[in-house]
Length: 97
Length: 208
Image (cartoon, rainbow over all chains, first blue to last red; front, side):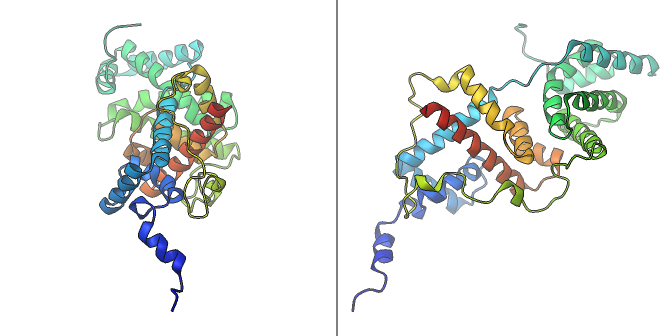
């Protein structure tokens, strides 16, 4: 009798590292970086990364992305707005105890 | 540029409470750009955002004595801003991000990486580029910052707000949840979708 699901059986034997497909792993990257994975899921994630250069590269791209975003400067403040705010502070100070 | 390390918020707040104008000015300069950015996500014009930010600082000045330091100054400040920006946004008939604590369907539910990048088994069809060894470190350039910034500007509002607070301003996930009244899971979903889109924009740019 031939196996009914030879394909699936073969996959189970050689399946993706950590039992996670790359397509699944990329959706867990933020959970991983946020340390929000359950210990066993974290272990599977790390097992996959250790064995899969492509996902390792993807994780590194995500880290680089965070670094780039962290370097964006918010725009500066109009000087006259700052003056008005300091005036408000002086007023408060003047009315204080 | 001053060589001294920047004073921390708490000591500036204490000095401002004692009437030290320079300390207050430092807080204003430190946080107004971020407040403007945040406010602009709730109201339709720069002018309105400026109003909201000014109102916020006035409220801070009036409420400073009542600030008990149970949350960080930053969290307290951003909460005041968000509440005022929401009020103003409603008055301007703007649909308000985070107005309802519903599911996140408007932020999309599909995969964050183009499905054509994977085989039917879910393995990569082609390797993601290795950015770590990029000798040009083009990703540290001003051009990369522009690409990332534009990608953030194109995000749906809630994703934009979350990635701005987390990755631009550097708030912790607890602080963001506190400022926006979000659950931990929703915060993470929004952050994930936002980061993935910025990554994609950088990838497209880096490959071209």
